[in-house]
Image (cartoon, rainbow, N blue to C red; front, top):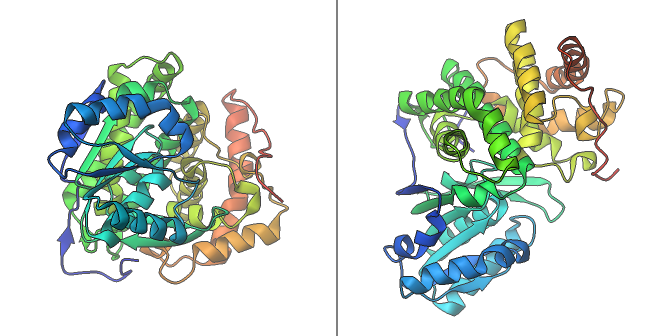
Length: 386
């Protein structure tokens, strides 16, 4: 975890090459051929079932073999170590994470350990994981374990917006939730003295890109969700894919993480929240951060209204909890405020007790705002365990 005391240096980290657009997956072989001759594709059965023919064809066009290894749900230490063994046994010189954030993180972590190139090929714009030089490691049950940091970013990030347009709408909504946090956390980090995830103080570029991501989302998120619902690629969707994937990735890594992602990490310890996407839990963290900051009422209320329209949770109810679940909320707050967590990048000290109060406050504030603005009341999430 980056230091929560100020560095004398500013750092900007970025992938070597970012490729986005309709039909980009058909060009995967061309871009991989510049990195190696024996790629290993990491993809779960669902993703491979959907894209194996297209990926195999793209690699064959570049005279590359298409060797694929399966993947379970989470980037666990065991999954990463297993991939390192597969890389060594097959003599692979580039690893490709094809699918969601955990698949991509496992590919990055194993590529780093095996000292080969790595590429991110997300099949949805559901998080900013693809661009970064870190991986989030979980237990097999989906509880946060640690961040792993690498000395470089992916050699290639390639995202096909036609693929994104055919992914479930909730994946794009999750990416919007993850990306909306980027500016809120970057501006807080900039006001404080902590380092960004890249290992130095935020650059002005990193902070500006975080804000650009925010501006694009407020302008384009709703029509982009409409485009995905219709399985079409529009300029609004292209803009949101770039905001979710590239701008949010650069913005969080070189601008900083703060309370929103720390609270996300804490929420993974609550069984009730299991099954929710990364971005859904991050959105609760974003609202709690705004409350912790004492942000202007209009900003908080507009954020609640907008994220409700996007389809993101902004109440405890929608993540399987209630204000009465005091023990679980206190456990979340304790996990969110452990030493070294990103919440300590906030420009003021934050205690577990303050996080408890902010999380409980989300329920009443969001219910009031949604009622006043004629938006749907929250529905209880029951997908997690108890």
